[in-house]
Image 1 (cartoon, rainbow, N blue to C red):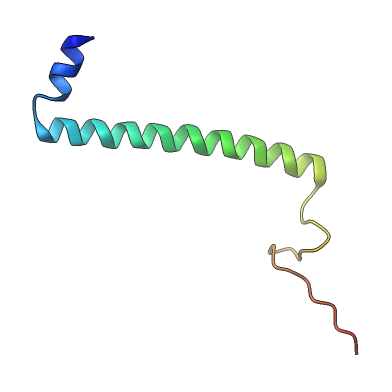
Image 2 (cartoon, rainbow, N blue to C red):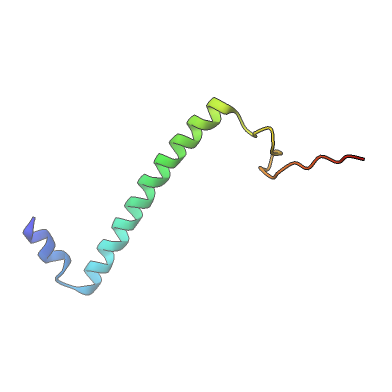
Length: 64
């Protein structure tokens, strides 16, 4: 493990590349987790909600 940290901190560009890979991995995991719960929620409650149109915009009722 110590060799890994020595390698990461050996060069500025290696460190930057490691941060980019770490952030992309985190973003991918977060997106997959978010999509899972969104899918679960839409299957449970349906889409679109009653107060929205098909685009997800709010529906205004005209009282004319």
